[in-house]
Amino acid sequence: MLSTDAVTGDGHAPSGLSPDAARTLATTTKSAPYMPSITSRWLLRRLPWVEATGGTYRRNQTVTAPDGREIDIDIVAGQLDGAPTPAAFVDYDPDPPEHDLHAAQTILRVPSRIADLYNGPYNQIEQQILLIIQALRERQEYEMVNNGDIGLLHVATPEHRLAAHDGTTLLDDLDELLGRRRNPHMLLAHPKAIVALGQECTRRGLTVEFVDVDGDRVPAWRGVPVFPCSKIPITERRSTSVIVLRTGEEDQGVIGLHQTGLPDEWEPSLNVRFMGIDHHGVIHYLISAYYSLDVLVPDALGVLDNIPLGT
Image (cartoon, rainbow, N blue to C red; front, side):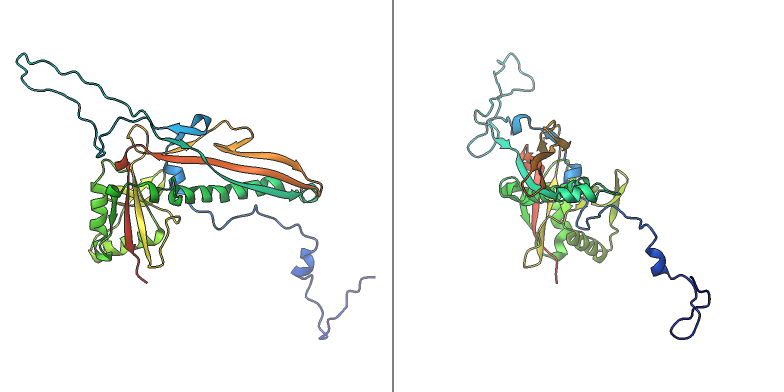
């Protein structure tokens, strides 16, 4: 029998049903899991992606002289006055470079008991797959910046690398970096380097320019958008690099390489393959992302190194 005149330990009547007690009967609204480490991944978003059928991309190019210059084509111009017209053709490199796709992979393991019993309101396997895909894409972008074979920081040619003089010449160094190539499309910089760029603009009494990129307001220098990329490392000496890119096949720029139409494809060039259930009742999925990149001509990629960030 419920007593209406019950008192608490201090002699006072209870004020009513407490929130803690009420929550025992309430249904909690749950969100999908969020991953704080996800970044904007501008490199993956802005890079044009080209099909590498069969997992390999061959870059056909013209023959170059031993010093790296193009072979001269014999051409006459002006008032010819009956002079013979020279014959010419452009020869192709008989051994063009080829790029195989790289892979970022991991195996998702979920006990079947978890998948059976704890699937509401969110499907456990699906949510795990989505989180792992985010981690794979983050690793993919890291490799495309830092990998020793394909990373932008490693494949830039020496003639397109500059070293910053000091923190007070950053804007001049950026001008030189941009001036060495035609039609640059984007700059990639660590967020702390972007802060340093803004500070140098302020020191010189300049206003930081912003441009609209697909609805996002992005800082720019000389009209070239500067995208943040936390995958660019900061050295122990507190220095970093800025990367400039011209992108796309039509502009003989930097391109991303992938292959779509994979078996068990979840999204372009990424598949989720069921591997079975082991004798412990654990469900296994192999999740793989395939990618690479190529620099079609050397001046499409430039790097400014040794940018000091201070303490």
